[in-house]
Length: 315
Image (cartoon, rainbow, N blue to C red):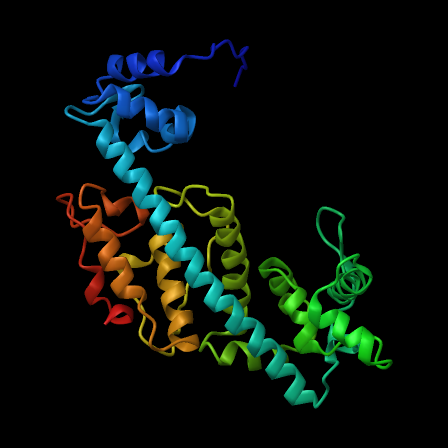
């Protein structure tokens, strides 16, 4: 494909409104629209235009700016809901890793045993993969930080040996991505299975889900869009669920709703009394104008979303 020079010039907020009108978007309250454009930016909102356009740069008849803002607000609240759920699951995963390894090996400092981790290797793009050394580096930096975490300082001030704090302190230093990296780096499949069993997932599937959890968590942390997004890192499909799962029409693992079902599956193990279904129902009711099919809830062929609430996992 041949490339061309970028020659678009910046537009004033009033000119942006004029452009939207030229493209057949209904704008009822121009001062209010300018407020939104000043707060959010035209470019950020433009990602929400596409489903409301049949052809490039032309909105569907009677599409109102309010619909765009409703969709943007829906996405923001969905992102907060997903982020909160990931946080709870992340804490549970960290707990199960610490508990599963420490109790099995009867070793508070199992993270310092290099034999429990895979042999370092170079991946396809030539980067060294060495989970043990990576974790040790994180611990070392935490111990020598100008302002160390309170629990790290307490250990350094009160104990001589072992030189590193116990695993339940050290794993608190890890981000979700580092936690995922550590799980992948465990050498013994029996260790991976012990941790994954708490969540009723096969270790291979659990490893994939950890990767996707990290990816979506980063999307949320950077305030990026979840609505109408194909996941670049797809969660592996759950082919042999231990508990309730979803039926075939809902198995599009490229879209957000499948990932939300993954969250439901995991958080049901970590927090059986969770209110994820209620929160999701309330979000959909709050924004009835927003087509939820764009998060991956399949349609009945007539533009109506299928009844996700009666899928086995949500009952």
